[in-house]
Length: 298
Image 1: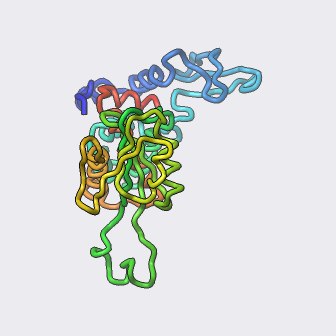
Image 2 (image 1 turned 45 degrees about the horizontal axis):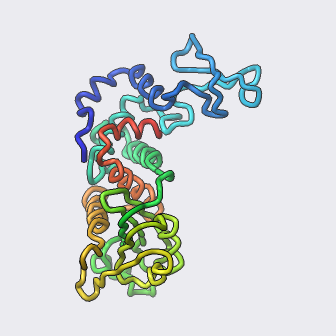
């Protein structure tokens, strides 16, 4: 990852007051001038009696009485008791930790009274890291699937998948990565051909020079729309010329080390948020101001 523009010490010094945090948030949230978060009207009036508060009197918004809002209105920081100084520290820690930082670690760092408070803050920030506006992947693209969850051999005897006809507890994740570029990954319910083909068509541009996958049957018909090549992992074939999934395998390895070593357990319900966090950090690995960009998205 690129060296950040600030160290943690510099961050706490720069944002030692709430006003400093609010000024930074204002500049990041509205770089072209403050606008109403409800109707996006740019003609708003600052309340002199209350700093970092404005009123919108647009006809279809606030009307005569006006719609009052602050710098934290409709952000992840709204309706919380923790100061922005603490939120900024949590954002910084999450963006600079390559394998992620657990809510328990955050809880110890910020001294929150309850672990659940730190857990709530982390999930709010992960939700802000979602990036649905990415361009389709170009040039050479790798596509692969992986499975997140504990090993069956480590489970209690009555919870093993072979007992009592239990369904697999592993979550299926599919991903695509542009070599030296961005990664996109998604939780899917089933690794069938329709689901996997749809993901590739939604994620990968049609004018790519290569789509490299393994021999999974879900990729069987990709050759109809893409220059598709496969490597046969079941026969110990992992690379053939420029056909391989090594870059995506590295991302999966980082994700799984984070899940097992940092978070220890991730429920299927919240897995998409963790995927968003790891993808966002990877896609912004060359961004020295990743902290500022996450603040802007909050």
